[in-house]
Image (cartoon, rainbow, N blue to C red; front, side):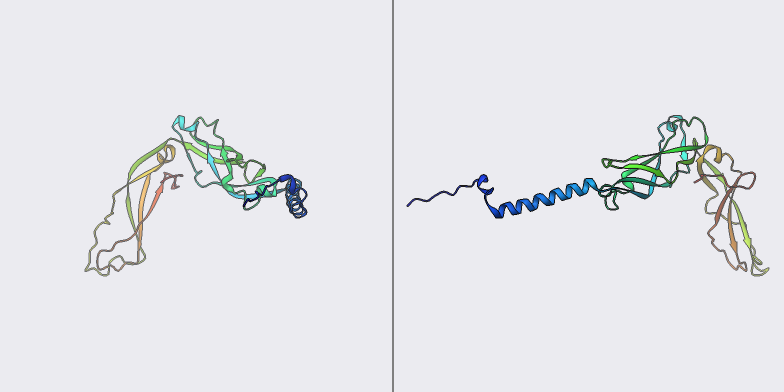
Length: 226
């Protein structure tokens, strides 16, 4: 008994009415999608909270550090096809905003220009604006010094319950504190106080959480300290 082998012919499909209907439908869908994407108008969209990065390549060579730029964000406006800049496609991570520091050559405050660009492979859009074009950043050499702490006790009434009790000088958990920041600001420090407030009428020793204040000769607090 012999069996006949079935053969498959692509050319034969061209004469198959059902196949041609399905092929035409698929082709029409593909053409419609392609035309829709290419013909869709450009839209503008504002992307919120793009983090600003300070270019420290030049300042670091001079030993300078940027202060006051740790948490700076701007909004960036982009323009492009909806399918390229939509909410589910483009995010703040796809955009890079850099503060230019090429002319930082001495300690002090600088107004830096912001440059925005695509952060990665998604670059089929145009950046048309930013909420800020400039930021101010302070540059200086970092410095750390140790300071003596002065305790200050504020009392709303009589500190002791009666004359039967006596009080000694306040005892700090630490007599000194290390303070870091830009050299010029650290050098301004003239006083470090640990202040507590008590309602008084004490019969025994009490432990308080102190508030530390750092001031210069004019009573102001130097900037960018930690």
